[in-house]
Amino acid sequence: MSKAKRKDVAALAGVSEATVSRVFNNVAPLREETKRKVLEAAKQLNYQPNAIAQSFARGKSGNIGVLVPSLPKVRMFSTYYFSEILSGIGMRLAEMDYGLLLLFYSPHEPIDYVTLFHTQKVDGCIILGSKNVPRDKGAIEQLHELKLPYCLINQRFDGYEFHSIDADHRDGSFQAISHLIKTGHEKIAFLNGPLEFSNSLDRLEGFKTAMQTYDLGWSSEWIFTGNYSRTSGYQAAEKIGQIIAEIDAVFVANDRMAIGLMQGLNEQGFRAGRDYSLIGCDDSDIASMTEPQLSSVRVPLFEMGIKAANAVFQLISNDSSKLTIHEQLPVTFIARNSIMRKEIDK
Image (cartoon, rainbow, N blue to C red; front, top):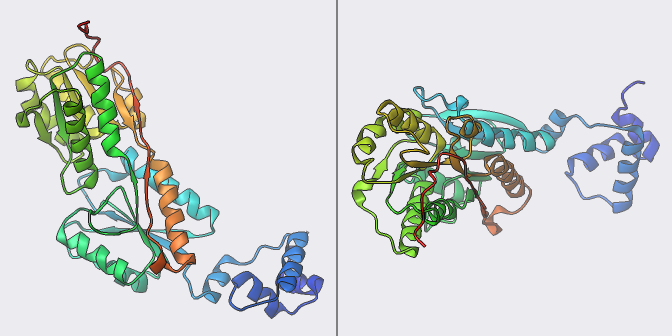
């Protein structure tokens, strides 16, 4: 059976080919009765309009740019974090007949997101890995002031109404620390990520709130900083190993650092789940494959990608000056056997 063409739909609906184009491209006002006839004819003939032709007719490229930092020494696409988010974005874009244009930017050079709309011909953009530093904030502020369709993932700028999809990292930390305390842990160290990321600040706040809620103090000497890489977790093991006798648990801001820390402490003879308790964040695939299996805060990264794509579509389709999109998705703590069984005083 030959594929239905626009002229076939026009003939069945009793309208011109130009009218069929106007219906599918939504470029001119039409009577509802005319639209109904065209759509019914298209359905009957199983007519599929050419997506590329549609995008040109609408003056759009049909592409959404996804911007990620270029970090040559970090195997970005081997990480659960980026692959899950990109999978969610890609699935949603495919459902909407949009293309995904992956764009890299250097974390050390000036950023001009606005130019990308002209040079790369994108209809909207999704930004991963932005930091709360003047360079990033200024570039996003320009996007926002020009009312261009964009969305941040996993980054919030307090005091700014930037469009963003986030997760409740503060509550995730609170859940993790509360579980440790309820299972008899009182001396808890924290390996965090850089404070230029809002999720690092949120996790730190959740950590402190939980300790205060249960009337426990903490030492600033027990709070460490890595860069979310496995290597930084491994390197942190040198310092944390020096205080391991003073603490009974370590909470880590992502699984990659937690696994690096676990490896480093293993080499010193300290085993998670036996000598200390360990919790990570993200609940990546590898968390259940380590020995012992890593407890973690499950972050809905795939869903965040879908939500960010939906946000950009909403901004493309509506008057973005009247919209402010900020959604925070819930997280869940997953307990595994990297947590020691401690005797709890009754």
